[in-house]
Amino acid sequence: MTAPFKVKSCDQVIEIEGAKTLTDMNDFSIKEDRFFTMSVYMINEFTKKDSNTLLKSFAFEKNEYMPDLIEGSVSCVRFISDFKTIIVCPDNEEKANALILAFKDFLKCRRGEGLTELSDGAIQRILKSSCNMIYIILYKKRIFKS
Image (cartoon, rainbow, N blue to C red; front, top):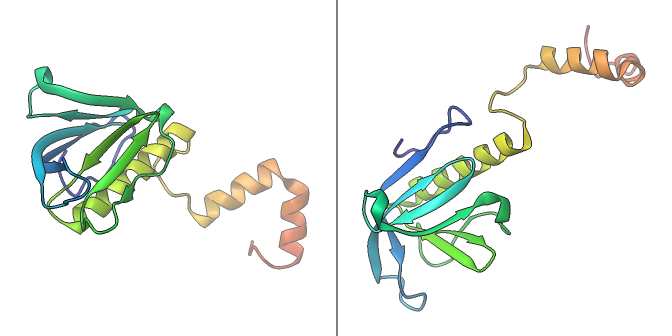
């Protein structure tokens, strides 16, 4: 999958083509072409779209920080994990933000939340079945309508 990097299932692999990486943190204009993949498990950096050109890889279980836009770079996203950093620079800020959102969706998958949003009715049913006393109190305060 390429941009806009929308995660539709937890077993999906996102391919990030046409991206670059920073090679000099003192000069953001110096970049090199790269190919990246991201899944619920890991992120990989290749010199090109060829599995034999793998440069860096790390599992998200070792991810120490939420990925973020590198200040001053416009569209470069930094992934940091135990002594490794992978920097992905899509060609615009919109794609960079979509990449961060995709990571957050994969994070939901890792926590077992899934990707679908629950309706108000579904939330009420869950509350009724798991927290009867709390639901009754909230109902009496008219927070939920029956």
